[in-house]
Image (tube, rainbow, N blue to C red; front, side):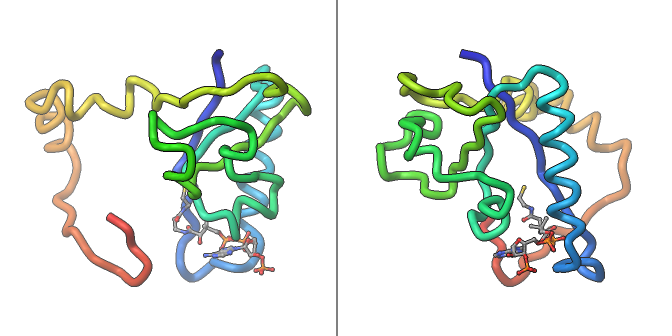
Length: 128
Ligand SMILES: CC(C)(COP(=O)(O)OP(=O)(O)OC[C@H]1O[C@@H](n2cnc3c(N)ncnc32)[C@H](O)[C@@H]1OP(=O)(O)O)[C@@H](O)C(=O)NCCC(=O)NCCS
């Protein structure tokens, strides 16, 4: 079945914990609903996404990209149409576009050259 994903959402550090992230998320969800979206799936922090009604996708019987049943507690789900996932179980696949760099590394490098050089940082709480 077709579902929707989105993100990443990002708020400048100077403006965090002022409610802007939730406003951005709730507004995006409303737009997704208006576009006909029935269900959103995303990897994220339940502390933030839970405030907007997301729950672990495992509770809906949806696994992340063939991960084992308990393997991805960060993989979250929100039904935009209540009950849309009733009777449905399965594995989510990221959109093809997410893998563009891996599929065509040379073209990706060319594309990246258009932007100023960025330095890779490691900050507290960073996973990758
Ligand atoms: C996650 C992010 C978008 C939240 O934006 P924000 O504007 O700071 O969040 P809000 O002020 O709207 O927070 C709403 C509620 O979510 C929860 N929340 C927000 N950030 C949280 C965090 N890092 N950990 C746990 N709960 C969090 C809190 O309950 C908060 O309410 P409270 O401040 O009254 O306690 C922001 O921290 C960010 O840009 N992070 C870096 C990028 C990222 O990780 N994006 C998410 C992956 S797509």
